[in-house]
Length: 108
Image (cartoon, rainbow, N blue to C red):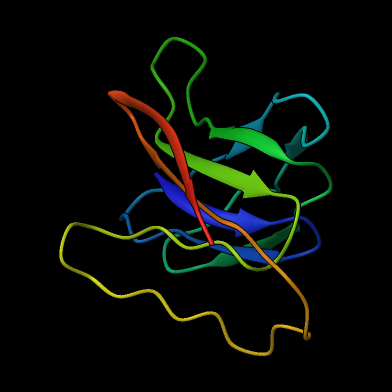
């Protein structure tokens, strides 16, 4: 799963040797990209927060998942990695971490 934010542009690149049609039916982020030739790219700007499931074949599971957060200060990390949020305006914030098997935890 990848992370993105509302208003962020996502670039999809076809790295296969065959043309592909990518689309999404997720609430608030539904789209149909034009057919992508091999090595071609297309862009989509995230409109709404939530899960974005990227599909290429209606009979198969999503080929990619993107979680769209309501702000640009979101990151996906792995154990042992550090997270740095740049250009954050002054103020009080809470960092929220989510682990698939555990409930979200907050720290200041």
